[in-house]
Image (cartoon, rainbow, N blue to C red; front, top):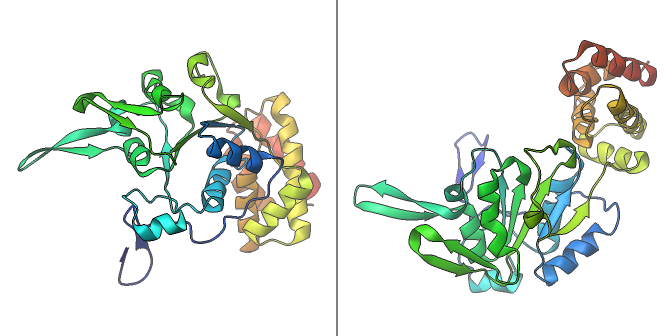
Length: 295
């Protein structure tokens, strides 16, 4: 670990950064039990749900629950094995993500070429969770790469090196995506979809969402309940021109602004109204909802 002189940030080597404290997560159903069963049986997992509903936090929570560091990618020592410390490698998928980005590539150095493992390869070797976030954003020729890891073979072909890597017994592949963004161009192929156990997520009921907002933002219980109510009402506007409902994440951001002394209506304008849409008519509709709750 590297620490700068004034203490404003810490820089960790990837094998040093671990989840030291329990991430705050309230189970909404049997998703914890399902994930643990899938992990035990080495079944790949697909998380489906809208933006900001807690998919990534759930993976982080399960990494902690299974006594796993967040990004430890190295050969485990005897101490690691005793503590069952295993990695969680998170990869944000995008349309330019290539197979080399996942598996690895040769780099030209002064002494010649050197092979550098990609994050997927490192997770396969170390034996941990590899989390591909928003998998539908990746190119289809890239997602096909994961197929051999998601059936009985559990192997990763490294074509550039002429190798096949058998996954560590503790390796688990987890993907996530937002079904609301599906289209003919951005959807999971059936050949990919049918390789995963699926867990569906949605926004919490108001009482639970209020708990989350209060805990994460520091606002009062009354303010958290008002923000949860706002979330429910704004989500109902999806049928009236709003492309995506307000996420729990944005409601927490709003709460944090309020906790810092920003007036509630102004905080809602910055974190909800302007963040959700550029359409003036839809903005006015959301502002009317805000005004009805924060008078």
